[in-house]
Structure formats: C-alpha cells, structure tokens
Image (cartoon, rainbow, N blue to C red; front, side, top):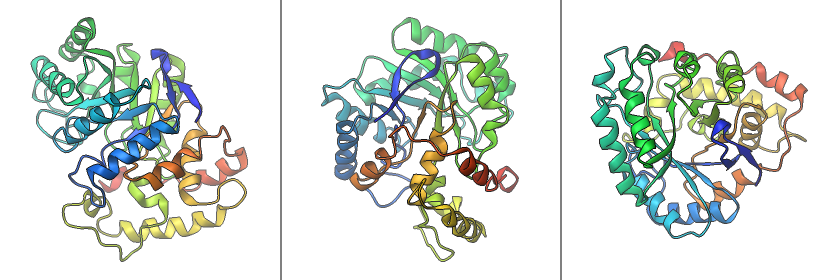
Length: 321
C-alpha cells in the first residue's frame, strides 16, 4: 500500500481508502455484517488506514460496524464521517443554512457519531452536502470550531453535491476547510477544471469518491441488469443510463492491456494518477473487492497517452439529474 499526505492535515493516509456506504445495510444489496467485517479487517491487514463512513449510512449502522472493527485493531486507523442534512435533501438546495446545518444540529450529530463509533475523537468530520450560498454564514464554522477545540473532532471538511465540483469554491477559499470530498472518475472528470487546481494551491486534502461509478466502471452493468427496488442503483441507473453506460464501457475495454488488465484497475489507476487526489474510497463489501482494489496501490500511474485517451470518455451527467 502506498500513502499520501491528506492536504494540510498532515495525515499520511492510504491512497486506497474504504468507502463504507455499502456496508450500511440499507440501499445496497449483496452484503452482510459478517462479510463486511472480514473485508474491513482484510483491508487493514493489507495496509489500508483510512475509512469514510457517515451517520446516514444505515442510520448509524455503518459507523457502528466500522467502530467495532477499528477498536479491535492495534493499527492507527483514521476515520472520516459525515453529518447528514437536517432537511434530508440530497443534493443541497439553496435554502437557509439553519434548515440544513444549525449549530446545535451539527453538535448533536457529532455526539451521535462519536457514540456509534465508540471513540472520543473523529479524525475528519464532514458536512454531507453543501451549497456555496452558505459560505458566508458563521454558524457552521462556529459549531465545527467548538467541536475541534473540545477535542471531539480533529479536522473538518465538506462532501460536495454529486456532479457539482464548482459548488464549493467560495467556501474553500475562505480557509476554514481541511478536506473536500468529490465524485471523480473516468466519466466524471469535471473536478480537474477548477476544483483540483484550487485544492493544490490551498493544500486542501482531496477524498475522491465513486471511482467505479457505482459499478458502472466495473463492466458488470448490462442493459438488462435489474436491481431490487430498495437498491440505490435502481435509481442511479434509471431510464436509458444502463444502455449508455454499457455502450461507453464497451469502448473502454478496447484500452485494456499493458497499463490496466481490467476495468476496475483502469478506473482506480485513473483516479490515483491525479496529483490532487490524496485518497480514493471505493466501496468494498467483500474480501474479493478488497484484495483486487488494494493491489492497484503500487505507485504506477497511467501514462500521459492513456490519460489523453480517457479524456474522451468525460461525460457531463449533471444535465441528467
């Protein structure tokens, strides 16, 4: 496992982290707690030291499972979690901040996450949605600063709305945030335009999420793929999206070879080839996923030629939401 410094936090994190939404027990199918625990432990055995979870993942179930595993280990594992929007609206709307992240609500959620995790301190506390119209408000900053002064959190950041990497630039420039989490993959390359240059300039830690496009970049999504009604992917791959993903993936397969033997490898190496990215957090619900994904943390980056070819697969899906 290779490690990178998470921006100005100074934390040395594994460049492959653990995205723990899929082990929350709700909105995803195909996993269970026992298998998730095995996968988490195996990941730590192989050098992973960064886990990203959230209070909203299974109403705290993911946090409790992560906390149980981390407390049983001797290694130093860094945990990032998130405060859900009070109004439960994803993505964030341009509404008053107090409807989403009031001071008392931020503190209350942090206390709940600490209880779920069974720890005294959260390494990185994040706001689970964001709208830059809130950047000039002070309530969220005051709450997070107080929590840090009390030793309940070490650093704080925001998780940017899906496909809106521009919707955080003002907040980042103000200097309060230590990290930012954003969707970044072969299809979603927009963070490269404005967000990543700013993060490099300000030394903001970057947590890249959805590197496999919720499964779209694994090659397992076919036009006739069917998910259970409760599975998040029923919505994500709605309408004609399965067909569109399939068509693009078939063309991507033509690039496989010396630089990447399979699609997940190509996808993860693409994300890790950007200097702004400090860690990428694929969802890993079983041991097979863990072993495969961690094997790509070997320091080898895609060549400029391959990165140029992958530029052709950038897909502006913000218009589809």
